[in-house]
Length: 133
Image (cartoon, rainbow, N blue to C red; front, top):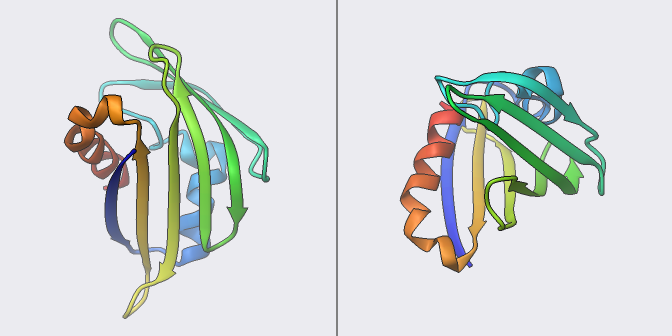
């Protein structure tokens, strides 16, 4: 695996930042989204072993992200695996939420990218930055 690590400081408290990942209505606004796409389905079952699905329509294709929560530990840690219908690969992601000095949340995301996709590490990091920003 190649670890892609993204860190961000968010203006929300850890509990609110965590909730933005697991509340389907909120997550549908940003998670697995692109600026040109439109969310058409978002479902989450944020418990250990629970599943999620996020579907986005883009100009010429439908992108489906499906996954399973490995660890749901509000408001500190979230781990999950996900895959896309278009690719035969499973991605593992862990997100840590910590109180930031001065308020807000220090978020650390680690995406374990399959070695066959190592050439896409920078692109993967940029995708997460785009979504988180």
